[in-house]
Length: 432
Image 1: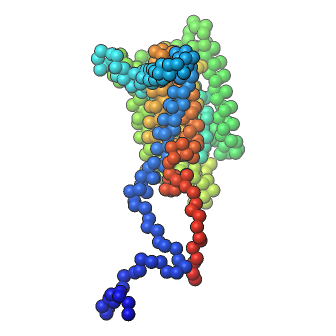
Image 2 (image 1 turned 90 degrees about the vertical axis):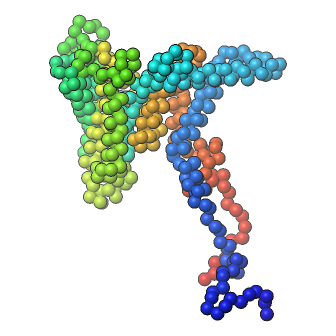
Image 3 (image 1 turned 180 degrees about the vertical axis):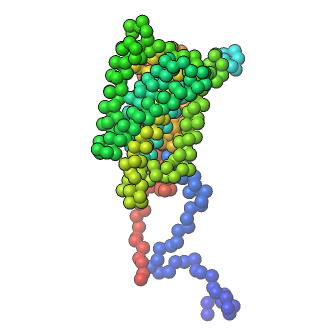
């Protein structure tokens, strides 16, 4: 007889801890808290944050490499290494301190109202970036690559500007009509690319690139043509100033450059979020973006969706051009009014993972880099090109999530580490 206690009659013996012959031992699943933590750490949002950190670290290396004091200290590194380390710290710390004070808050100002001015400059720079980024992100969600932001901004700026300096309307109505004209101009220029793709199968990348050139040379011609967009008596290709009744009002007074356009991009962000996540049209957009063939089988008109998506995308990008001409450059615009915003919007959309609020945050980040970059150059003599390198590196790291996970040794979203190796051992024998 075994010493093991026999359970009373009617009760079932507890299962044995030892596995049956030929079966592998049961593995307990990890705690749910660990799974959630892995999902957060390995998720796309955290990868975007780490991409920004890596880009700033790479920017620090470039700052050190271009600093004359560091180069001089390196000449006697082995005799006085502390001088080199001190020079590196002062170079990187001074540059990023100037970046912060030029984009967020300037501690050297006497009052809070003066110190907060850099933040308002950041929001002013971010306003057109957010608007254009929303347009590019909306096209991304439908599976379209809208790189025609430059042309859409130029057409929208020309339409809004023409209304702004030509018509004589009451203050609020004049501004609203100018905004609507800019949105229509951008929508038509973007919708043209969607129409060509839907009806002829033309690739939207090629079409939008060509439309960029057409818009640039068309606006350049109109700015040199008296009676069109050129200011009367002006020899330079520049438009007349915008009427005061059409200019965006200042949000915080004349001491700050932040204008009503920032309120418009907040409303645009809320609208795009609602459109994509809470409306039936947004469901069609996402369905076509995920699988056009399946969406077509489900009864969704893919061609009409392409046209409508590019119309909305162009309107949002056009809001950036409208904001430029009615809020930032009100003394008259030239053909360079787009200021590279159309291409920066692609970076903003990528960093924001084509999510409305992600694009909003990415636009503010790039606005801070723009606003602080000039301060960094003026205070520390750091080339402004380093800020462009940082922006490019952000895109590089976002486009390669496995690289970021490998550098920081992060788990994948499924909970499996990229450094995990398959365990060697005997294969489990499965009994039939």
